[in-house]
Amino acid sequence: MKSARPDLSSIAALVQRLGVLLAAGTAPGTAWGYLAEGGIAESVARSSATGTAIPDAILVASSMLAERERRIWGAVAAAWAVATDAGAPLAPTLLELSNSIRDLAQSEREIAVALASPAATARLVLVLPIVGLVFGSLLGFNTLGTLFTTPLGWICVLLGGGLLFASSRWTKRMVRSARPRQHTPGLELDLLAIAVGGGGALDRARASVSAALATYGGGELEAESSMDAVLDLSRRAGVPAAALLRSEATEFRRNARAEVAERAQALSVRLMIPLGLCVLPAFMLLSVVPLFVAVLGSSSVRL
Picture: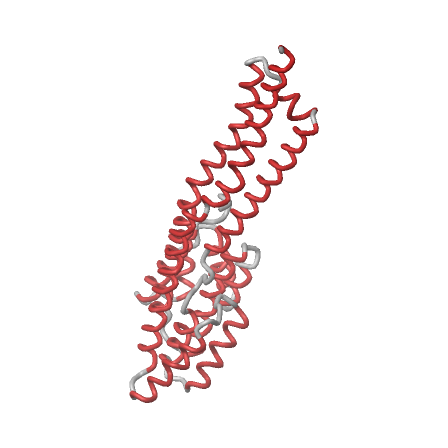
């Protein structure tokens, strides 16, 4: 992961504080103003003070962020838009969304931990060829000349460099595949719970959710079948849909969290594969083979 990427925990804390302030009865614009300490909160507070709708202010303020952060703030904007349209409380969804963001941050930390040991081993192995070449030169063997001035040496350089490049690409692909695929799992269910909680008709509620997600983004639209199943259960049982939708959204988040944790644990083992198949052979080609050839050449000259 790039160190320049914003800390998701700080975003989760901001969203949680918004939820707490709204639950306590603070006006939305005022809540943003209390949290305006620079960054997106200050931009949203300033825009909302001039009459801009808060979801639109969030969209504009987050437009220059990276995709990951933009999608998270898009989820906040979509939830805000749906709650405003339905006249429903927003605080519970913001609190749940902050938990989802924390899960995402924890997943990235687990992936970083899984990557740390193989990455450190790979860096050590990459330094060893230099140490081996210098050590061979100190012993009087022409290892550098063997590596860079002979046909066999150039073959070793090409093969070793190719293996290191392949290892780098392979590792990056593994890390990408282990990253969370959903930034805000269950968001559509939460948004529909907000919409129906406001007392609106179901068709209008679904239209409001679809419009909010289309305008502000933030959702992966992977819960459509679950949404239909929950609404069907609500109709058959004659119970309010909002509680069922929130329960299903919680289950979505729990499953997404377990899936990412499982991938992170598997990653720590799978990363050893390119280390063994690419990095270690590259070390042999770039260090051991030139030293061995230089030793043989030196012995034959003395003979």
